[in-house]
Length: 282
Image (cartoon, rainbow, N blue to C red; front, side, top):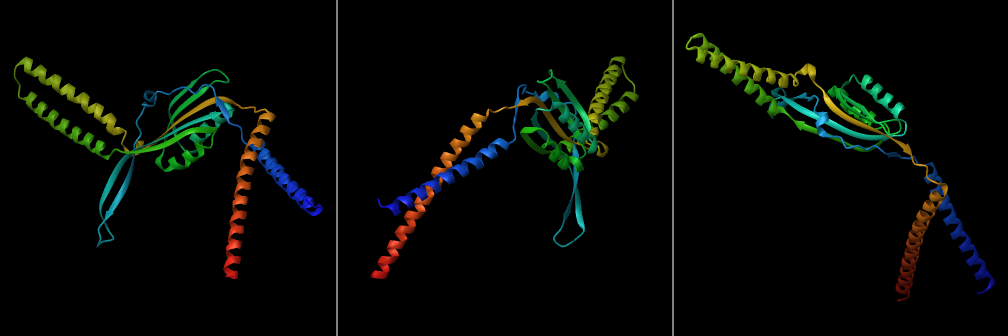
């Protein structure tokens, strides 16, 4: 190897080393400034039954148009249940709890269930929140920015048929009650009278229960639901040597891939060049 070749080899080697070092520095700076995630020490399992405090329903009116008319032919009143579930962890429990309560106030929502447990450093907070349907989406987007979210989902279920069935059952019971009241007015034996009275009382109780269920569907009680769980943890203090080793591992893997890609491209360009020269010669 002559002096010029040695000089070129040395130059290329220094460029490759400089590229490796530059890539390592970029990765290390990124990992050093990367947001720390909390360790959720008290990630307790939440029973689904604790959320069954109140059923929230909302409605949406759909207008159905015909092909020949711009005037809606029918209006469909859809009843639905919409539930968002959010699980989040935080290292600043007090500040994030305050933030959640402020969001509830800002979006005119209601706390329908609240449970707070655990000691400092290991606390859990569970909220079931009734949210006006028009504020649901914006409130959901605000809440998923609190802490570090580990799970989230939104479920929307149509309840129109259930609402119709409840109304039909109410109408049927009212007819039976009216018939029994009329029958009782005709008189009869004491034991028959008592049986009719007991049956009327049973129907009255069923109608009251139906009234409560149907009351959840009333327009003035329309809400969507947000079930929010906040768990307290602490930030991971990753040692600097761990970050260096992690950055070095990533740099080696990435650099090898880059070199392999460049080698493949160079070889491909070389083969193309040879083929073109042969074609010109022929």
